[in-house]
View 1: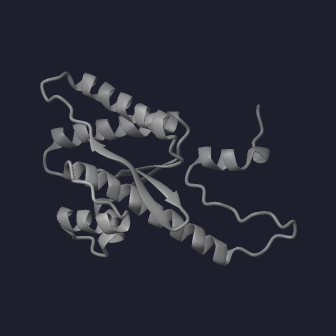
View 2 (view 1 turned 30 degrees about the horizontal axis):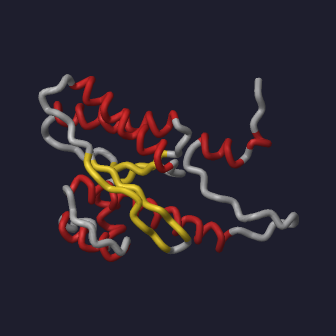
Length: 184
């Protein structure tokens, strides 16, 4: 399982952390899921991310592999949601399109472009790590574009309130609009 964390400041993106969680193949499948949960939890506690982006499952021919991948993604997503972090999924094609401009790019092309975007000269540990970093940068691009478009379309409010932010989840909506929530 690859992971990539970035820091976003205005239009700038910088690398916080990137790596791969190597799971022992001979270990019980439930133990591997527990290790995924612990790693995601550790990264959340260490960096306190505001968003969680993940690559959507791709469809393969091996049903058992797809099941295992779905479980692993589900554990990672559930861990982020439990921490109150909004989750967004991106298809592999969307991620490649966002990074290189071509949804059919090879992993090596994506990595080279990421090095330019994030301005880093670190050595690649594994393509799983660069894939995860690409998802993070793709999310940054999507969120920034959405904010820019929302700013252009929004009409000024009489109260002079700040521009509204995009809400992807009910949790994000509730955090941004506590006055609109009734406790029963």
